Length: 401
Image 1 (cartoon, rainbow, N blue to C red):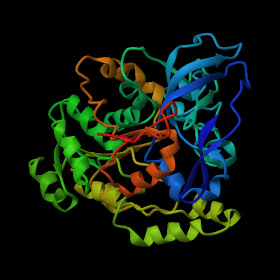
Image 2 (cartoon, rainbow, N blue to C red; image 1 turned 30 degrees about the horizontal axis):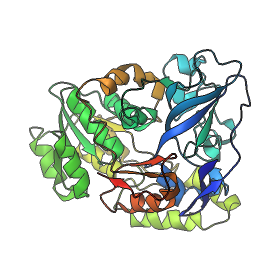
Image 3 (cartoon, rainbow, N blue to C red; image 1 turned 45 degrees about the horizontal axis):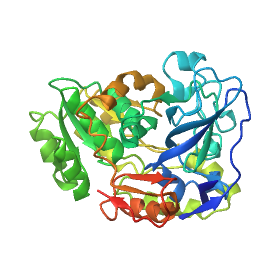
Image 4 (cartoon, rainbow, N blue to C red; image 1 turned 60 degrees about the horizontal axis):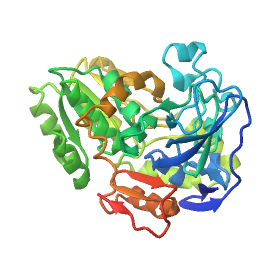
């Protein structure tokens, strides 16, 4: 089969690799019909080389059709259309029963002290082959699939694999509802959905991003938007001068405004893996500009909900400010299955209230993945969300919306 593989820092290729096979009775093989490039895939593209091997198959936002099932699979049939959550969980352990699938005790990567294994996401999370490929092996397939209908387009369902439940968790952790005010930092795919979901729950939402196309997309869905230089005045203005009830950080370690940290990331990435790994695990630092801004802007007694990915273990926090303002911090890897029961009806609802059909800006053949990783990272060509189509002709031009 063809698959998108990591070959080195900023080096992605599409290669012929062996087809996945049933390894355990509970496995299923999925023929992939759509698979997306996630913002967190860019961390692999740029930063996480010490935890990757050349040839690792990337991708954790995947859906498709069941091609084959193991003898222990009870709920899936060949030809069934499914979405695959990005975290791999058992559904029965103490953590899973409490809606903490990202901490699944059956798939935790104890070697690195990490939570549940993830598709296509480094040794830190199990080095499980990902879904940017023609085929994907899904372990514990009865639990790690979401059965969906056959009528709606892939893009109505695909984002249930990661970014839509990630946004839903961020909004739920923020605790905002009717009459509350929410500030969303960052209007990448997760920020887009977080803003829409908060508004759907009745909150008044302001969102900030430096990229005009991202602000324009959010504004199409009734979200008030501003540029970074205007955010302080705008946040105070729409919250009666107190600051928003909640800030949702949908940026994470990709934040602008920390050139020193960016230089440190570059230096660590240039080291041999054996030296770089312990430095990243124990002394890593992040670009925390968005998080610090959120702490400054949220009202006293408010909540900062973190959906953006952070990996540093040596990041200083302004503890005096957090304590004095009584700020609540809530965060974590998304527990995908916890939110599906609420989200699936919204995704299928007539009228598409969350605008799932208005997120993908580029749908391209799988072969164009190397080019699209670069375009997505550099925010070129109005790129907000890339979906790869393994069945598309490699010579077909990108569909750009």
